[in-house]
Image (cartoon, rainbow, N blue to C red):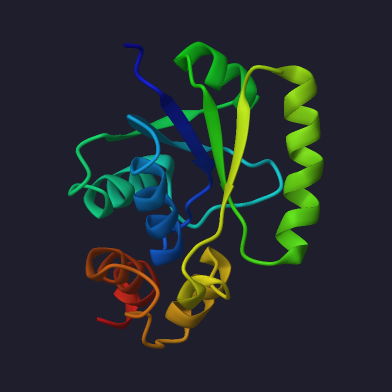
Length: 164
């Protein structure tokens, strides 16, 4: 039987517990989940691709059917190359839905066979995004409710190394 592979693309700058929740939900549906770290031309990431991949790998180490990769270009082309049957997207709020709906329609035009799967994170994470986590951390706030201990340490080091 053919393995069902799904791609969960994003910037993940950094990976949050909301992202992890979506990944954990995804692995219960698909045989394999590829977390695909991408370049977003509209964003200037705090962390390098290698740093983001390393944080995701450590965060998802307990999930044997998750791999982490990098892609550049159209996600639908990468999905085609990986033989993915679905693309996972997280929805936190109606504002996410409007953007994701538009992107899903474009993706469907570019790759009609690729199923778009929208998953809602646990309600504890619906307010959460990487931008908020970076901002709270930059001011020395407690981010332990938003990210894993490893990611919190990496963020703290990034923002507060000059204070040492």
